[in-house]
Structures are given as structure tokens and as C-alpha cells.
Length: 389
Image 1: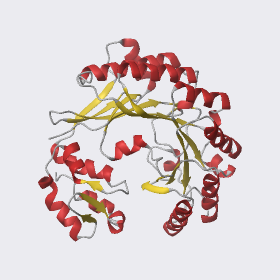
Image 2: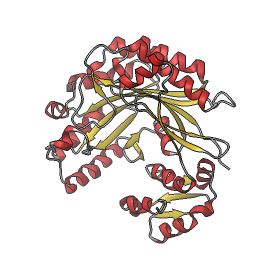
Image 3: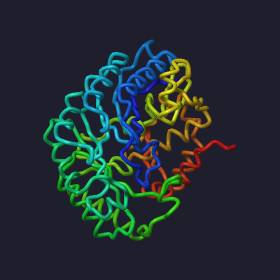
């Protein structure tokens, strides 16, 4: 029997000052002033339509977390964020301990603005540092410098947030092992409660894809990860997800809900959602991608914000579940599989037995734990859960 899990909300702000050459997110370089009030009105109407379409007002689940991503959400004023959050809470109740994260670019932040976001209801800020080296920042197309990144982290400590995150990349163009570790040392020195430390990957439809830079080789990348992981562990950070490190008690609750196959509404340009229902259905949704099309839906008042809706068939649920769960370091309770997929354990018994025999999983009475070998052969492990066509 499927038990609808915790509910989160993702809000997408699509604009940024300029498009970074590695970025494959739905972001659009700013060409004119952001239609802030119109977009906020559209976001709330988008939410209204989801609530109505999926009958979320019947036995409502409170929001466990909100994540405002982009783009660059910190281009929106503190007053705009306040109005948005107040509008959301009028429509869906918040849990008392709700985590509300907003992404911020160090180049768009001043002290007064940061404090304004905190007063507006933001409890956690994710700061897109990426690197502290000026040459690397310029190569990545970032609009901030090292001083702005350091200042943003110091401000985040001062304004009374529950937590904040620094986003840091390694494996950058022409980056040496020493440079990558120096970046990490600087981040650790700033003592954020949470660090997202991830490798740069070249994605299709990006400038780096069409003009590939020279990146560190696999041996260098392994040395960077191994030595960096040791530095983070020694500094008191615990790895809880592939690229997520936090001080104890400061994991990102929104991301944990994703990886635990929780539910989330998505509002805003190109946002994705996943919803489970007591009748056994699981659906995935995608909203209109381009800001012009999305705002046209608001002005039209007839055209839906929804671009696509897909039913997740039972045969596809094991792959989707484990594709998310195996990002996490923690053991996976078997009951979570039953509750969030609505499937019996017998549905995957043969595949689990094979994974154990291959040394990819440890299997005990109540949970599964991916092994070090399983992490190395993760693609093979996940493919085993894919439905045969």
C-alpha cells in the first residue's frame, strides 16, 4: 500500500545576470528588468492550479521544505520573497520546523539584502561560490570575485540563519590538485554548516560542450577527491550524499526528501514535480520552460502552466527509487521502498539477490546498504532495476 511521503516545494526563478558556460539549468540571461510582481503572481497561480488539479486541499500534507532555485533567485527583492512565502503559506500549511532554502550568487548580495531575506522567512541560503581563484571564476563565467564570496559567507554567519551552504566545484579547466585543495581549504576555513563539493561535468547544450576545456584526468580527479574527502572529514564534516557534506545535524532536508523518494511540487519555469496518491498513483510533472511562455499562461488565464504529466508505472518505480536512494550514504530501510513505491519486496527479490551475490549490496532484515564496490559499479547496479523494454 502506497503511503504518500513528506511533501516539499521547489520554486524556480529563471533569470541570471549572465549564462555560465558550464550551466545546463533552465536559466536565461537578463536582458531587461525582471517582471518581479507578475512572476510572483504567476507562481502563486501555478500553485493554486496544482492544488486544485491534484486535490491537495483534501487531507492536506504540510510543507516539509521549500527550495528556491534558479537562475539566480537573489535577483528577486527581499520584499518579493516575503510576498511569495506568505502567499505559499496561505495555500499550504508549513511544518513548524520547515527548512526554506534560497540560492544566492555572491555577486548579487549586500549585507542589507541578505538580512532582508532572513526577515522574509528564508532559513537557509546556498551560496554559489564554485571557486575562490579569480582566474577560475572568470573561466567559469562567474560575476563575483574571491572577496565577494568570502564576504557572503561571513554575512551568512552573522544574520541568524539556521544554516547555509557553500557550493564548490573541483575538476575545473586546467586546475591542479593543489589548486583544487586550496579552494577546499578556503571553504573549510569559512566554516559553513554545509558544503556541496562536486566535480565539474560537461553537459550537452552548454558552451563548454561545444568548446570543451582541458580538464584534469581521472587519476588527478581521484587524488583530488581522496585528499579532499580526508580534509573534510578531519574538519568535522560528514559525507551523507555523493557530493553533500555537513556538520552533524545540518544536512539539507530538501535534498534528503528528493533522495528518499519523497514528494515535491514544482512551480515556476521548467520546474519538475513528483506526487504520490493514496490510490497508488505516482506522477511526475513539468512546467512550461521559457519565461515568455510561462508568463503568457498567467496573462492568458486559460493556458495551463503544466507542460507535461507522466504516470510512473509500477515496473519503473524500482529504478526511480534506487536511482535516488543510492545517492545517499545511509542505509535504505526496506519499509521505505514499500511505503513510497507501493510495491511488495517480492517485486525486486531476484534483483536484490543478484546485487548481494555481486557484492554491490549488503542485505539485512530491515535495510539495504550499498557497498564500496556497489558505488564503483553504480551504473551496473541501477541498470539491473530498469524495466526491460
